[in-house]
Length: 430
Length: 93
Image (cartoon, rainbow over all chains, first blue to last red):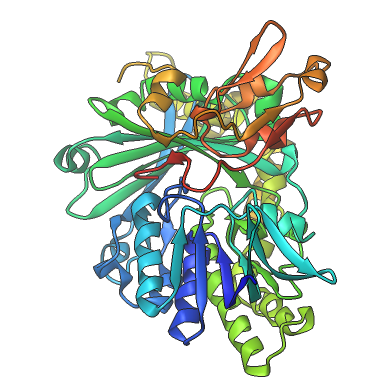
């Protein structure tokens, strides 16, 4: 006879542990299953953890959580083969509680959140890879690992971007090459003092760069670089279909990027200590599947949650929020002792009303816009060229900026119509 | 920083290798007819190589991202997670 629990959560990432925390806190019997040796050991991110939602789950979490640096400085950089054009913004409000976003290292951070769920009473089972659902009369009644079954009133699939469980349940369309990007990241160790001097930071503050253009060899996507306490996370996210067309290896593009004259000084003297890869779901709101079925809920990346407006890419806060809302729906289901799809549909409604799906909806046209290639080739060329012409003084009479700009657009092969169209889309879709 | 090869990159990682138990399976017949052979260049860990016409996956270096599974054009490749507790162990992540 298989063991039966009230709730089984598959995957102790941020979504799974957030759900486990809330359910265990309410007194339910929760098993949190993780395929890695410890939570976080399979997880990798290339972005900033926006802490608002976690602050609701665990108030002032930053006082105890292993956060790296609070990001106060955001830099957007357009890169060409030799030049760069950056917009830097430093927000003082982000340097004090409740802060805004943190750099985190998931191997440490996810482990901490899972421990918090354990403290509330969740049972963490690491080192077990769930390979399928157990069904009865077409309804999910549990999960299985090898031939061992574990049963539950509710299963929460928090098994990440490749979610085999959500797919088996028919709640997740299989990923297609046009819907995903490949993320790769290198961790580069540097002393804290060097990082603070180099990035002009004080104390626990941090910098995050978003870089487009030559960073991805002109392919759709971008590079990221941000500071941790004693390391720099640097990597690329490139759309898979572009990467397939270009046939260049992502790690070769990363090496070129790290050698770029504007980037090399930022990582100089550092020591690479880890290299990782992660698929990024880029299909957006219009391609989301249903988030629930009988006895089953899907959270985090397994549900396809990612909000990208080009400047800010968010997955972790959406994951945490979805875990919390899933837990609320499960608690209601236990109150009524009804675990049907109908009962669990309250999760979907709550998600639609929350910032999570609202933000994804707001940015639903962004994935299409971000695939426009002018953004990665012509525009970086245009802005760096324009600034060069404005600053260059070569003893010939200057034209006014308007004329310089028109000439530069011609050189960069951008028409006024292109600019107006892209500008309008950028303003309304991002 | 000096340029590093993919072997050097994955070489600094920590893995628990499930010796002799690959989580990647190749249908050589299907792959022999594949024109794209995208696995050879798309894998961020450089897991796949070609030897005497066969696709050889060095599964031990796998970063478990799933890119190969999505990129594979003719279903010659079957990819699932390694057994529990095996595979990549991100210390930092």
